[in-house]
Picture 1 (cartoon, rainbow, N blue to C red):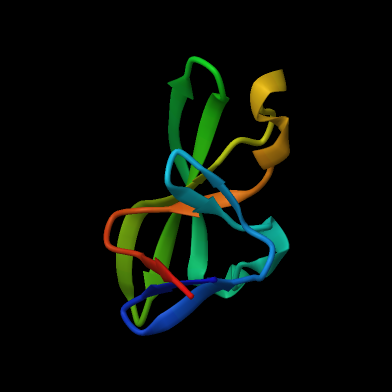
Picture 2: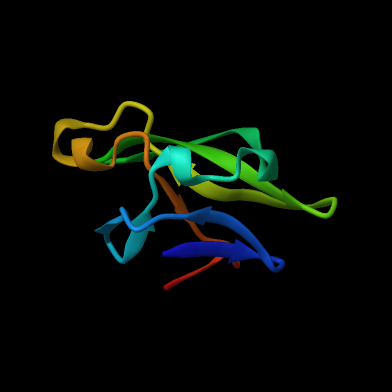
Length: 93
């Protein structure tokens, strides 16, 4: 699977976990140079508190384009630390 935004591959892995229709990529599969941290956090009742990353490609920022659960609740431990995408990031094979 690949996560692509503005023609740049943000993440690529054969090891994704699908939850609620979203592919969660291993954190190590991300191109770290294409992300900056975000101060945004949201709470999911069964997964826990999500943290976000902003994608940056050719100077353009896609704020909070990726999210992950650094300390997932027990029911979501299988995606702990994995990263999913939205906001225009195309995820496909």
